Image: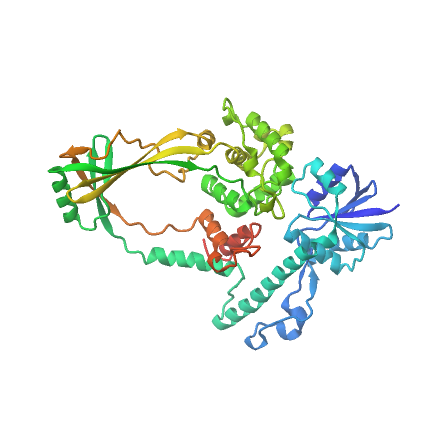
Length: 521
C-alpha cells in the first residue's frame, strides 16, 4: 500500500488534520492510517548554519575576517529537535511513501520550514501543497481534495530564502562589525535596527520639545461657541476679548456639507494588533499568539495575513457567519441589521490569505468557555465583520465663520443624519470594561443653533482660554506597528509586492526582541 506523507508545522496542527481525515493510529512522532502518515516539524527544524560552519577563522569575532559572504550556503538541524528531524527523514525515505504533502502554515515562513527539511533530508519524492485559510474540517477536506503541485510555490520559497539570507548577511556581519568597533555585543538586524531608529527619533523629538503657551478668545453667540485662531501673547488675547465685548459679531459665512464616514475595513494582522493594543492593551505578540490559538481551535481564520478583504466566492460564507454573530454576540440583541457583504469582497486585493474573520465553527462553540483574552480577540474580529458590512455613517458638518473686531472666529458642529456602523460600534464599546477614547472625538455631537449669514450678535460674552503645545506622544505598540507598516512608503516603488518594515507575521517578534534585548522598554 502506498502512503501519502503529510508534514504540518507543529503537533497540534497535525492532530487537527488527522482528526479531519479520520486518521487515528498514533506512532512515535507521527500518526498513521487510511493511506496517510501525518507528522510535524517543531517550528524551524532546519536553519541556515552559523558563521563557524564556513571556516575556523570565523569562530572568533574579528574585524579582519569581515565580511562573511558564503558562496555555498550550509544548513544545520536545530540540536534540540534532532529526534523529530530523524523521524521525518526516515518517513520521507520509506519505500511505501509515494508523495510528500507540505501542510505547514500557508505562508512564506511555512514554505521555508518545510523546504529546508525536504532539501536537507535529501527527499526527491513528488511534493504537493495544502493551502488553506481555516482549520475547520470542511476547509481541510476541501484542501486535500484540491492539493496543488508543490513546484507552483517555488517563487514563494525563493522569496523566503532571499529573506532568510538577507537577515543572515546583515545580522552576522553588522552585529560583528559594531560589536568589534564598540567592544560590547550590539545586535544589529535588518528590521529591528530601523525599528529602534524610529523609537530613538521619537524619543529625541519628545526630549527636545519646547513647550509654548498660546491662547484662544472664545465668543458665546447664543449657544454657538466660536473660537479665534492661536494667539501667542496673553495681553493681545485680553485686548481682543475686551474689543469684542464692545462690538457686534457678524456671521460672514455658513457652510453645510453632507459627509459620509465609510465603515472600517476587515482586519489584517497588523490592524487587529493595533486595535487590540488600543482597546485591551495587548502587545502585538500577545495578539498574534491569541489569534493563532483561536485558529488552531478552528474559531478564527489564518491570522498571518496582510489583506483586509475576502475573496469574491466567500459571500455566502460571510452571510452565514454574520447571521451567527448576530445571534451569538449579546450586544447585537434587538439590532435590525442588513449586511452589505459585497463591499468586503475583492479577490484582487487578497494575496496569500483573506482577512481575519470568525468561522462557522462558532455555531458549536460557547465563547464564554474560552479564556477571557481569546474571547476578547474573537469578539473583536466578529464585531469588525459586522462593522465592515454595515451602512456608512452620514452626517452634516456645519462651519460658521464670524467677524468681530476685525478678527475671524469659527464655530463647528455636526448633525447625524444616519448612524450606520457607528450604532454597532457604540453597542460593542458599551460591553468593554475600559472605555478607550473613540478615535474621532472632535465636534462629536456639537449641534449649532439655527444661524444665517449676516446675522449679528451685539456685545457677545467672551473669554480667554490658555493652552500649551504638547510634545509628540511616545510610541505605543499600536502607533509603532503603523509606523513599521508605512516605513519607507515614499521611497518604495508603488508596485512593490511588500512595503514597510517586516511583515505582518514578523513585526510582533521584532518589537519583543528589542524589549528582551534591553534596547527598548
